[in-house]
Amino acid sequence: MKAARPWWGALLWPALLLVCLLPGVLGTVLRPLHLGEVPAAFDPSLWRLTLTHVRLVLLSTVVVVALGLPVAVAVTRPRREALRGLAETLVGLGQTVPTFAILALAVPALGFGWKPTLLGLIVYGLVPVVSNAVAGLQAVDPGTLDAARGMGMTAPQRLLRVEFPLALPVILAGVRTSTVYNVGTATVGAALGAGGLGEPIINGLSQQNTALVMVGAILSALLALSLDSLLGLVTPADRTP
Figure 1 (cartoon, rainbow, N blue to C red):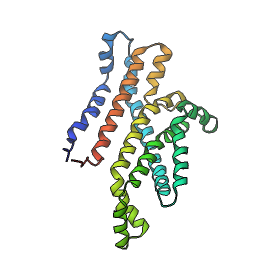
Figure 2: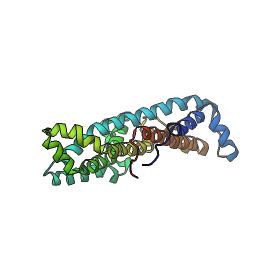
Figure 3: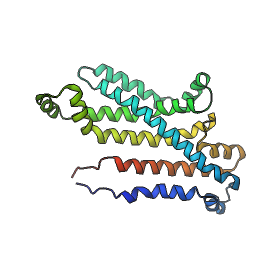
Figure 4: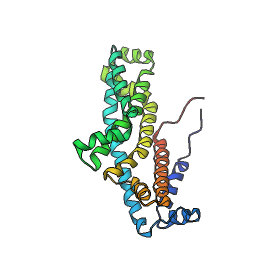
């Protein structure tokens, strides 16, 4: 059995993110690189942009789980192989079509702001959740299900008390992957007025200020690593020898 990861190790990236959000820290770190100046007036907005980014990612993750798990359950029931193939193909289109294309198609119908950005995050984030949930549910030992059936469990009881607990590590790994993906994808939403850590990147590109671009990129990367570490705390430890 592999040793469980220490909980304090998962707090390293969130702590570094908080340090980088302190006024003047990133500007001071980047100044020797001569990439441009980070305006002091921009520092207070970094907290707001980071919280906006977190809200976008977490809200999209909740919706993705609420949509993806029922789809995975529906297509893994007996004699639904054709439906499973169709669902995986349709969901997979979310990562085949470029994010910009999804957002461009959503803007005429939903306007600018959070709505088209959330739609893009949901479409993009469904793939790992549905794929992992399908793989986890299909990996449940048929003998275990037969034993549960022999004990008189109904189909819903087998799903909730046998299939989901056994598939949970794989399902949570998919949720974790989807969340990290969407931290990067959410930066595109700044171009649509959704806010978030894409704002300093876009402002830096328009002003030819590489330091601002680096601020957005560094904070986005640290946020992705922070969420991955924190979600790792709730993911069951690997119990393989």
